[in-house]
Length: 536
Image 1 (spheres, helix red, strand yellow):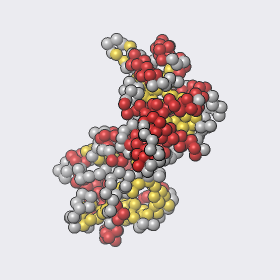
Image 2 (cartoon, one colour; image 1 turned 135 degrees about the vertical axis):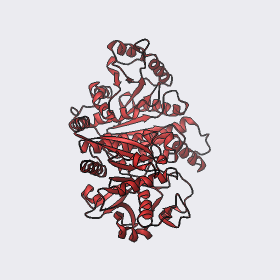
Image 3 (cartoon, helix red, strand yellow; image 1 turned 90 degrees about the vertical axis):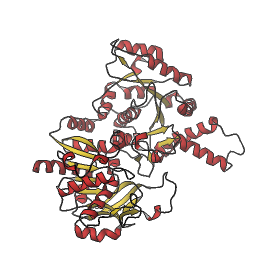
Image 4 (tube, helix red, strand yellow; image 1 turned 180 degrees about the vertical axis):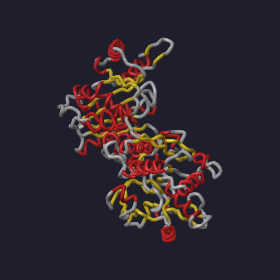
């Protein structure tokens, strides 16, 4: 029978439930268990696809086209296995399902209520992954904090599942905060006690406490927490602030979080955790032999989570090149022809980030022109690739009015145009070209050299595409289509062969980069940046 682990949070948001869930998953996976992780989000949006990145960070896309919470990116990067539609559930999706059933008359005239109808649907969604037969353990992260009105149906669903499936098959980990009061020179346990009390009032006794802290937790504090929160002393786990999120599995291993879980759930221990590759990654991460400065040009740079997968893909690629990546965030709206040279003068390469809308577009185009003309490595993703096409059309083909119809609907030269199947779509949510699609690479191209194969598959999230009416002129002038979706004849990758490294991709390679499999395009981009720096 599949075992279920629930991760709840208390005291404060943003404590790192996703990282703790992913770290525990990694430890159990390293012991030989088959593990997956899902996220239950209490907001009423059906998915984060229509949310501004400033609201919720990046929108992560799965292989099967689900627009999901960014925590799913952590799950994939740690476990090195893909997630799916079933791995992210929102209150909006739950209520949408229930209302559709009610409208169809499936409840036979009964009064539809939070209990049992909403909670039954939540329980069904939680158990969907276990029904595949692929997983020994399903870890479920509950968004928000205990006590939030929005989270109450999820907490009640967990309570019911623990009763229905038995204590041996369900376990609750409560992540909380031990604040340090500088005036008193001590860690305070009272917020955690109140958080556990709130959870108890909902009928759930946490089995394990994971305590975020800036300082070591003494045995005296552990005993105090155990006494007042009804847990074993060995179930009080210290989660001290780490240098890197990739240190957390090792910290949790030292705290024996996995051992406690195995004991409480009566799991048959497979073997000692094999984390040699993980430890090797950490060793290389902390001992680089070179470094480069990469400019991340985007319009949401104030919030690091807006480009979370890109940041982590650079970490993976840096390790693969034994290189420290100094990522310099550059707001595209602040770039113009008068200051571009000054803003990019110490940069060894730039990545122009994805995004939507008009703001900052001209700054991105100006930055791309500068690095193209000065032989500085360039990597463009989604809108970044489209901006590269616009820049090339304007400054090489001399089509001064070239643009994307997303920005200039009546442009004279629509080198980037709305996809044909998108023209009749009116609803915004979940209607883009989403998920994994095939791409065929041109032999000898930089993309082919990176992947070392012809046929690839990458994840997409866009409505606009390269306009093939301009392809012949582009290629004659020096920008080639080195990757295409042959079924639809869509240009997926453009590059300039005469440039040290100038590659733009319509898809999102950052979504597929993991600790064990860094994405080849990011790896090759960093290699090109180090070579360019050495040559200069």
